Amino acid sequence: MPQVSAAQYGKDNIRVYKVHKDAKTGTQTVVEMTVCVLLKGDIETSYTKADNSVVVATDTMKNTVYIMAKQHPVTPPELFGAIVASHFVEKYKHIHSAWVKVVTHRWTRLTVGGEPHPHSFFRDGSETRNVEATADEGKGISIRSAIAGLLVLKSTGSAFHSFYKDEYTTLPDVYNRILSTEVDCGWTWSTFGSVAEVQSAVPKFDKAWESARTITLETFAKESSPSVQNTLYKMCEQILEAVSEVKAVDYSLPNKHYFEIDLSWHKGLKNTGKDAEVYAPQSDPNGLIQCTVTR
Image 1 (tube, one colour):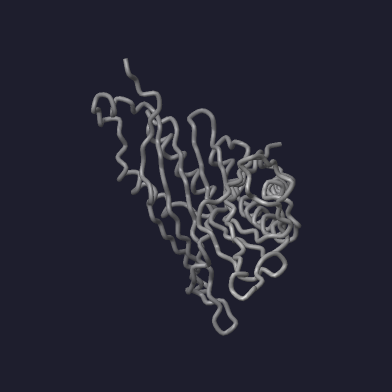
Image 2 (tube, helix red, strand yellow):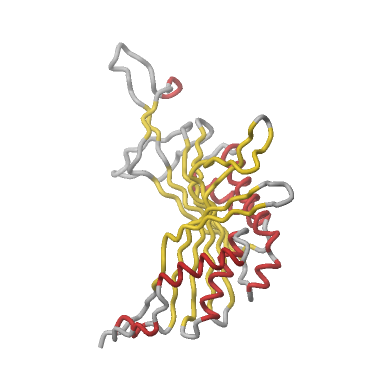
């Protein structure tokens, strides 16, 4: 007999914008998010028996996110994700697990005439601050924080050589190359027992994000990288050292290649090795390096 071995459903791409207005100063602060909610529980009969009585409508999930955003702070996103996830598990007895992903988009305050403008902003790149919060009935709240879409490049200071070679290998050893990647870095917190515990940890979330971002950028820039793998590991080590409450750090780094172009066919024009100045950026295929480091 067939049976449902796993099932979840929810609402994706819930767009949320919230503005905080400081009545005393006239300064406004804005937050824009994209939220996804997925629920698990005693819902298998909605699949097998067409029993919609166990379905919390995805439109209800959307409305709930809006209401939670009105009634609670949306920053840091770790707290907001925990509040939303816990709501569904506590509100509906047949729902035993709720997964909430919060993607916070960058709006940076404009400077006009040398002064921060009170209510004008610009989109500062495609980088996002992401949070995945899961509330499991009787088990607490697990949270993974992340940086995503942070595009970085260094024009020198990277190498890749002495790798395994066989009859399928055509890649030569490279002792100086362009290194570019789009950073996806996550850190998993020790499990929280309740929303109240998440609330008490609020000051640590922004600090951890700032530390992870600074470590990533500075290590990328400063290190003479022997490989993406080794540079990635050093980043993980430093984040674990900087944030004691984090139990694991993970990176996913696509290697965005820039290839030298041999122009010697045109009047002996030198553009390889130490003479390389013009490169061809490659969209695909690309290397993809991933690693998780735990305590």
